[in-house]
Image 1 (cartoon, rainbow over the protein chains, first blue to last red):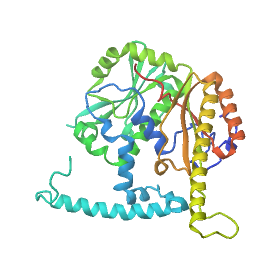
Image 2 (image 1 turned 90 degrees about the vertical axis):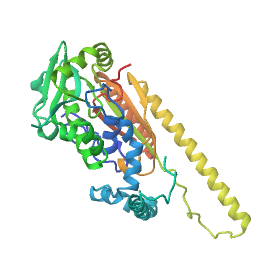
Image 3 (image 1 turned 180 degrees about the vertical axis):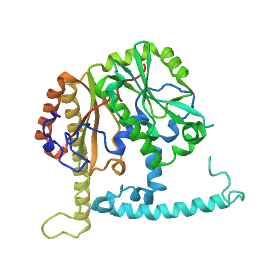
Image 4 (image 1 turned 30 degrees about the vertical axis):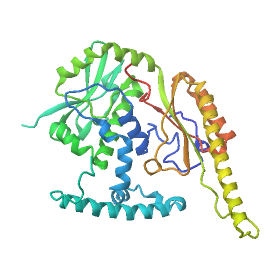
Length: 120
Length: 251
């Protein structure tokens, strides 16, 4: 392909630099999700889904709250090595653990009424 | 018998099905190109046990599932946009059968044509810029005055620095966006991305989408390279050419 070498244009780690493959991809997950979930033509098909329910925001929250472990399995664990975020990440792991415990408690006790009316 | 549906990836104009090559559909289903009037619908057959309403509600909650389908969807749209004028569909646009896809193309025919006109001969480029807005704690040299007044003065100075850095970053983002915009047919500023999904450091100060005429590609890229040289700290990142996800829209 005739892409000019462009390595100098990216000065920080951000997946693969431009011009490395024949088919330039939005290879990071955020780029892809942003476009396929948020952009593109909306025509209601016969299968009705409400993508608003899973907007990026929700996914992000979910990634943080529910799936820190999962994210690490998937290799989205770079923040562990980021000095700026590693303390936050540790906090999130702990928060995640607590939230899951809380969720389990709530699920177990969904018949009881210990937390009346707090969820809308 | 398993119920099937037709997953719609994109609507194209001027697409020769042979040019799509062997890009796989979802779950390795074969890609089909339905000709309808002067449009082509790029589809594949999917199992409604996985892509039906109830299954989707469940599956879309799973990030690994979502990622896999999103990447497959994007692969097909990319392959289409390489060889034809393309209007990408939103993820999981699914019709019950071929006749239903054709009915959608009739229903939305004018809008689709307008969208395709808008992006004909163009691709989308993504340009991002970054800034390090984290305060540089504890980096002062020399002996530290430990008095309360000095502490407050340091705190105030740091807040001022932080504000100045933020103002500077916002201005830089505007400059980059504006200069690139003069070489694009259309522009959009998207929300900054989350570092946990996008793998970057610092703060994303610009997430710009640019609809660039294929003939202006070189000029757009050299403008971006020039900006990257002028503002080396902004870590300007250019991606493309992509399908016109942000610009092929129904009015």
